[in-house]
Image (cartoon, rainbow, N blue to C red; front, side, top):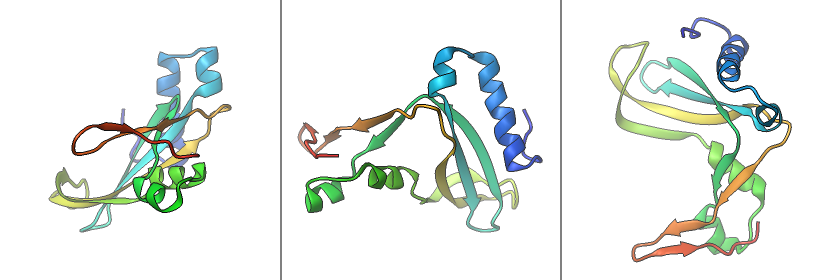
Length: 137
């Protein structure tokens, strides 16, 4: 499917319909939302968008905040989930300048579901073993 030339809203609608045509049920009506994944070339500024439907969000509990606070607010976990990250020398070929470039990547919730399910990743791997986080959220 080629949606790149359409507005953001039309791209979102096209992908949402594509996934909905493949799986339409009462569960998707209640729990399905849509993430927007944006990649931006750090050389020329060219942006590409991708839309992914989701039924739940798997969100990490940031370890740095745990050591400092002992408890954490769910909104902070969601902010970290959607935080912009730079991918340096990742091998991504830009659609604008046609070179392998470094990119900036971020996620955002474009369509919220009627019922948002958040899965908290309560385990992390340390150097020696897997440990459970007992942080209050």
